[in-house]
Amino acid sequence: MAGNLDENITMEAVRIGNKVRELREKRRYTLHDMTAKTGLSKDLLSQIEKGEFIPPIATLMKLAGAFGVNMGHFFKDEAGTVKIAVTRAHERKRITRRPHHHEGEVNYIYEALEIRKPNKQMEPFMVEFPVQDTSEMVFVSHQGEEFLHLLEGQLEFRSVDQVEVLNPGDSIYFESDISHSFRCLGEKSARAIVVVWARK
Image 1: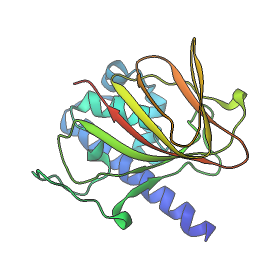
Image 2 (image 1 turned 180 degrees about the horizontal axis):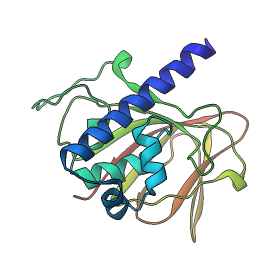
Image 3 (image 1 turned 90 degrees about the vertical axis):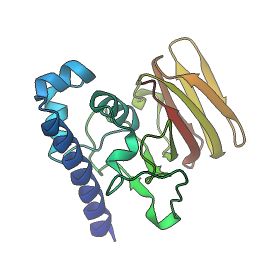
Image 4 (image 1 turned 60 degrees about the horizontal axis):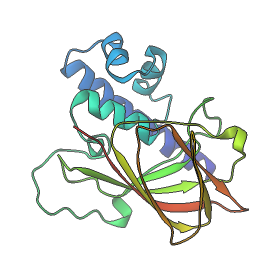
């Protein structure tokens, strides 16, 4: 079972890495160009392209913005033009961190809830937040806005000057260019629906 999980993680990391490299080469960007466009280091970009690093949502947003695509591009097999898109439960792409994740990597598991519609304005995810200590929190920022609705567990939201504790049924909407982080409180993981919107 653990072997299958590791294999699935590796396959998804390689899949995303291949798409990043294909987009970069298609647009004739160098890694240096991508660093300038995203603020991500060349080493990190190289690790993503090689499938050695699982990009968190904020990193995918920066990459999508640099390439002029939406985040769904990294999860779907082929592009198409649709006005109504249905993603079945078994089709969702689950992205989890490796057992030995990189320092500074965001500690959560996410699933893309919509993988079919190109050029969409919103990106919906199911996110699972494992229990963690304050010292393990990783703060991120990215262009756009973010909405989170908590389904299970207890979650703490932190920005530079605000702390909010969310319980099941609570929601939070914020401008995601502020530095922010979440951590799960209590004894079991928290689960939430997260919708992100990136300004074009």
